[in-house]
Image (cartoon, rainbow, N blue to C red; front, side, top):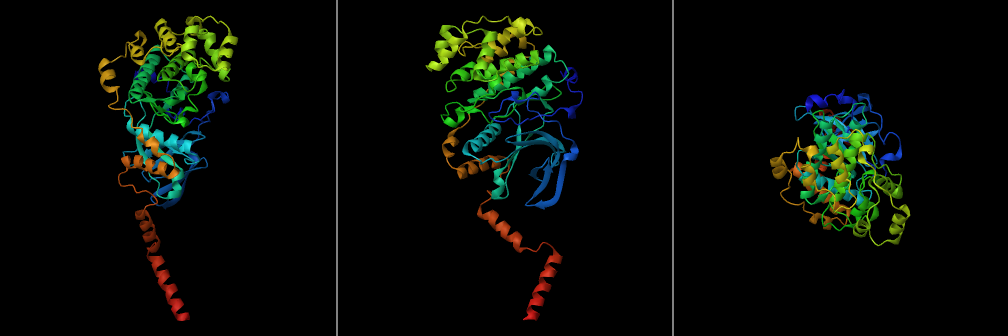
Length: 447
């Protein structure tokens, strides 16, 4: 696969990754899919000061206070929640990493819980097709806790940029990417987690065609009844119809639908259902899949009269021939896409069935799927009951930080206060000490 996929990466540094997506703002906001032009290396300015074991860097007017071990390279992406940069880890042979700075973490409880949830999930899920969290930088001052720095493995691009590059993906690339996406998703679901925001920009990829799922800020844990988690689910274009019609009744099948949308987009090089709003989203879906049967509507739609009125107004729409919709797709690919994009989630193909589909047969590894794609235990969600106050969330975040930095001390603790007192009392250098003695001598003489 390496030799094949190298054609897609003509220049590794010309393709960036890790776009931070804007909560409720969909990708269709502009023709560039919300992407910014790439920055040059000259956009990074290092402030020559070292305070509290941090070096300050200004990157496109965004302040990064980093451990000395991390040397920034360039900006990779930016959004409402912060910025991502690439950096060298000088304590690990200069290995490239991606550092995601989440800003205004405690602006509100929902935002804080979103960051905590991502820390918890990424810290627990270890799988070849899920991005690896390497480190979480601890704040040294209490006021610094408004920002959280997540250090993750570096990937050369994301699937969105690959799809919309000038290169043409081959069937083998598309099948391998889809297989890996399903493997990662099987592991996520086995841990009792729904991703809820699968889309091309949340699939990282490198020149060896290795794919990894990222961005778990909107993920939901099974049996978690916190209402904050149900307010926003999936960028509209990749949103399953059961979510559009009844957002409080859905299961892991919503992620399977998103995989179908991504697979279709890999062939089409354009979103398959680019709806402008909720009603247009459903119209886009039904214009291709056909309107659902009365039985499917009864099973999947709640009793809201407005929803039933809308479905009745659409009328009876016959399904299109998928071969006409995706003329570049093979027969096996079309069969898999049609099964992934089935309206009724109870009739939608399962992940296990999809992994065994003929389109993916070349890559299916039964031992890997059985032994490496099942989590040992569901994610513990008892912490959700302890997130009522801002200080509670801070302490839970610090628990996650200490998994990577066992010696880290909470910034308002007595130990940190003692360190600051000692640092203030201690002369900065011998010249400062001499100056202090001279000043005291002059004071005594003047008296």
